[in-house]
Image (cartoon, rainbow, N blue to C red; front, side, top):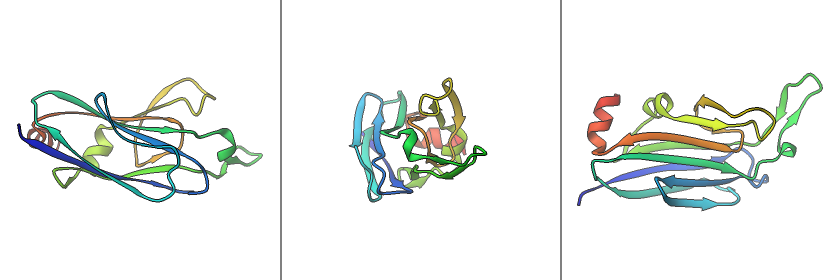
Amino acid sequence: MTTSKISGAIGTTNPSIPLGIEVWLDAQQLLNQDHVIDTIEFEYDMPEDNENHELRFIMKNKTAEHTVISESGDIIKDACLTVSGIAFEEIQLNQIFTDNAVYTHDFNGSQPETKDKFFGALGCNGTVSLQFTTPIYLWLLEHM
């Protein structure tokens, strides 16, 4: 069976804050890091099986203390994780990822669950999900 490579990088805006990340492809965990200190690159060869798939990035371990808010309600200082360089077969997804990924979170338990567009930074515990199909090249052509 042929395979396609999925790759990307996870970074942090504040390495002193113990934000964690999990990366999943369907039911298979590709990465589990409890504290992102340096940029973590990941790569995985997935089978081209003519199926629907879901790539998920799950941020964990963020608490209210990791965000500093002014008296007027503005965020003064925050810790986030970044997801960058997402590529299928070394083709950078960039806008395709932004257009198709969904960020589901509940503002770390302070508000009802919401679904947002994802622009590269996870600021709340939650899940960024990208639905796609294989063969990868066909999916890419349909979304370019």
